Image (cartoon, rainbow, N blue to C red; front, side, top):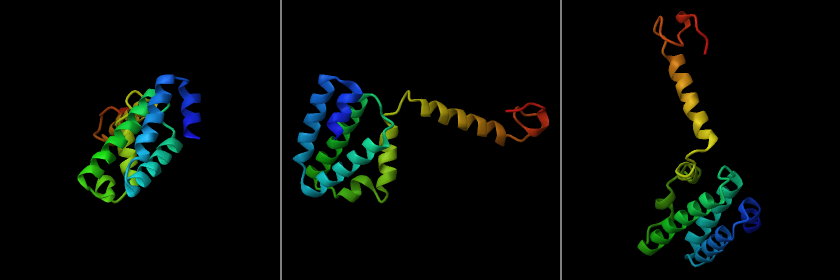
Length: 133
């Protein structure tokens, strides 16, 4: 399923090879680490916000590096991902979303709320300035 998705997304031989290498490496992990990587892989694929094949494969490779190091050091899976695996996945993927439209919208939202929250009389965006957001 995922390999077909990568192919449709990029059509890049380099990305497909890197993805196949990632899958082969992930199969070499000890059971609980492999299971965790597969679950995170599935979540990140279905989440679908990374649309650049090169970025996606890099992200998955970095995730695998983290779990390989954890397995080598004997770090329990729960220590790697914390108590909330969804939060872990979301924070992890944010590191790879530079330049995505959602980041621009996040910044726009923050600026708009900052303006709206500045309720000093006469401040830009305040109720007393006569301007609308």
